[in-house]
Image (tube, rainbow over all chains, first blue to last red; front, side):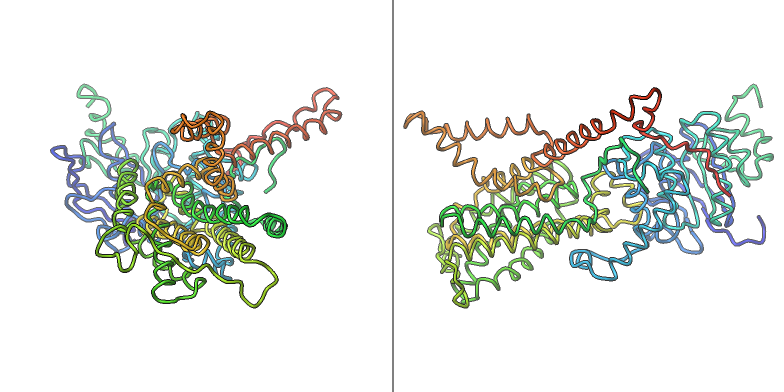
Amino acid sequence: MSGDAPLLDVVGVSMRFGGIVALKDVTFSLAPEKICGLIGPNGAGKTTLFNCLSRLYDVSSGNITFAGTSLLGLRRHDIARLGIARTFQNVALFNEMSVLDNVMVGAHGLGRAGFVAAALRRRAERDEEKRIRARAESLVEEFGLDAIAHRAVGQLPFGTRKRVEMARALAMNPRLLLLDEPAAGLNHEEVEGLIAEIRAIRDRRKVAVLLVEHHMNLVMRVSDQVVALNFGRVIADGTPAHVQADAQVLKAYLGDEAA
Amino acid sequence: MSVPAGIKPDIARLPRRMPGRAPAFAAALIIGLLLAFSASGYHLFQYAQVLIYMIALIGLNLLTGFNGSISLGHGAFFAIGGYGAAILMAHLSVPWWLTLPIMAGLCFIAGFGFGMPALRLEGLYLALATFALAITMPGILNYKRFDAFTGGTSGLQVDKPKVPLHLPINQDQFLFLCCLAAALVMLFIAQNLVSGRVGRAMVALRDHPVAAQTMGINSAMVKATCFGIAALYAGVAGALDAALVGFVAPDSYSVFLSLSLLVGMVVGGLGSLWGMLAGAIFIEFVPNLADSFSDMFGESAKALPWAVYGVFLIAILLLAPHGIAGALRRLVTSVRDMMAKASSRPATELPAISVGNQPAEPNHRTTQGS
């Protein structure tokens, strides 16, 4: 990982909700095109960190830079254009829209036509719409969703909705993809598929992946780097093998006796 | 890209850019022309009023049906449009047709300006803030200091538009046709808005605001613009109404107007633009219908019209929970299903070929690629 300038740099980030400290002095960095697993017991602060990265929360102190730009001065909707996309723990799709429309919303930032251009249907707006549609259609096809492209997302099974969400996240050609528990609710076979898929996404799209996951097997097999959190602090950061052998990590997961 | 047989296209909430919308507009135009040359003057006045309500309802539906923000104060912008147009015509001799774009612009600015701060509120709180707007409006129009402009409680009289260019039609026909043209243009624009990138952003904010923002949608901007556009539609409707009626007075713009518009939108169907025609018909004719219905019970039944109105409203919402547009849509799909079933039955009489009608689930996780 040395030599590369980091894509994502989290420096001394703390996050407090009232008296509760959700993150304390969290520091780590992620190189371009690497897959980083973020692990830790429930309540360790993994999703909180994600929400700081997508500007849903304001960090209490510290700094987060992405490709040299500090995220802290940006608004929520600036994050996507910068190149950070994400999925959500419980799947956050637009339920009354079709699969294709959901992915097209993901490509929102590829266009700039506003209300006036849309109302008058200016040529530039129509061309832009075609581009967005073509982009979404190719993703829908790539994720094997073409048969259900025009169905409302709300009616689809959970596993399929997760795929729609992944396709939507990739629609903007992000440089960093945040996956919040991509394996939750999947069976053994599907997890195997997911491992191959995450790698394929990274290889083909040259995207870095930061994933929160409880499924240890998946994290250890797919990640180049693993960061372990416990009670809001980083307790280990390194290769999967290194983190797996770390005494503090074992303690956090298995309790005192095991350590 | 083909939808497998047996799967209902259940996404009508977001109209597609169909090249096939020309027939609907042509049909509306033809029906409108037929009406213009067959109906009596009074009926044409009522039909013109329906089209005006339709314009206001389309705007309200863009805000509520598509963007998910509620407004109980839409009538206030209708009032601004009406009074603004009347003042321009009566005091500044502005030609009536010029008041339409002026009031459109003014109401957009008013709506955007009100929406920017108000849309920080959500749900019931936003409803209350907009309700306050509706309550305040008649008071402002009544305000003594403005009497010179507004005519106070007695209102403001304006000359009704004259038929231009010696066209061989009478004034009622002319006004109706103007309203028809305006309604179709405003409908066309609304369809353009909701079917593209901006429309997706509006619906995305309604369905999941946080996810929408994460996709790069500027929530505050889109919502406030949407509020401005809803106000613009109400303003155009109000200005047309002032020209059609030739008179504005505070009483015409009470809270009841705002509530009627809300009723019309829900009855017509949230998220349906053509459905707003049905909603407009409801708010134009059902009160009269309720009136004549209760007349059968004689003089003693003073409050009965509203009771009858209420019964009509409850009946519609029970029979068509997704509005009249929703009911029609369901009717069309079930008829189509029945026809599809009828035509596929002979083929499926062979054993084990009924697979064709199964919703095909994609065999995901098997197409890993690369």
